[in-house]
Structure formats: C-alpha cells, structure tokens
Image 1 (cartoon, one colour):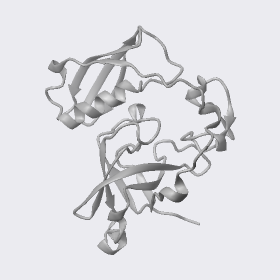
Image 2 (tube, helix red, strand yellow):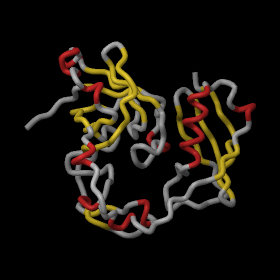
Image 3 (cartoon, helix red, strand yellow):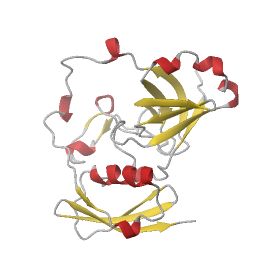
Length: 220
C-alpha cells in the first residue's frame, strides 16, 4: 500500500537537534497546511469539537537504506539496547511518527495546533481526533521510562540576545532549552552546542545544571 502526504506542518523548528523529544513538551504553535486535494472544508467538518488531535507523520529527515530491530533510547543513556517496537526511535521500519497535539483554532483552512514535536515541513499522512474515553488509559505502565529522572535545566538568557525574537519565540526557546536539547548521553561542560530555530542560530553551553545562551544570530 502506498501512502502520500495529506498535509505538511509549518513552524519554527528548522533543526531536528532541538525538536522536543515528545509531543506536548513545548507549546509552540504549528500550522498544518493541507495539500490541494484535501484542502476542503468538508474534510474538517466537526473537528472543532475536539480539543486534541493525533497526527500520523513521516520521519522525513531520518531515511535509511537499512533498519535495525534494536535501538538505543537516549533515556537509557544511549548504551542499552531495546527492541525498536518498545521505543519511540525515529529510525523505524516505515519511518512513521505519532503525536498528540492541541487544536488551537482553524485559520483559513489550516489547523493551528500546539505541542507538536515535528520539524518544519514534515509530511503528515493522517489526522484523527483524540478521544478521552478510549485514548486515556488509567493505570497505564510506562515500561523503562518509569522511575527515570527527566533533567530540566536553569536557563540563562540575556535580554540583549532576544531583541530579534517575538514574545512567543522567546517563550518557546526557553521551553526547548529548559528540557535540555542535548543528547541524553552528552555531559561535556566545555562543549558549545548549536542549533537552528526559525531564522536564527542558537549557541549555548551547559555547566552545573545551568544552560547559558551565548549567541543568537540571525541567518538571513
């Protein structure tokens, strides 16, 4: 069976390095823009009654010729292997991702959502409503993710560096940095990290659980 995109997403995540590891960790707004074939208001009839949606999408930046049936989740330090189907690794047999996002509004035929963990221009293959009575499971177990500490950092972001950013972009950037965008097994206090966000290059370092933004350069 061949599948093709029904839409693409537009947002400020221009670099996969700093995209949140899971949906809902940042409330950045994204726009879901439908392909011409599906850009019909009838396809969205009734969707405004749902607060959240499931996006089925493609890991378009992680295409490999061969696939491994085991992966090394960052949450386990990048050293321990588990089965690919016991993980949310982006390297999958069919390169498909699943994310729960909040529907903020409908705007000129596009869906404005928040909480997406998708890079800009990611293809979307399907959209389904989140249904609380069936999708929310009481007493669900989290496997090897349980009892793991999710490190958050103190962020030092000087106001002089953010003059070119909007208030929403500053808030989103702080959320990204607070959740530590580095690979889980990196802990080099002398290393300077960098990633692209919107039209900017962000450079930072981490020392003693404090992340300090060093530069915000406009690439345009």
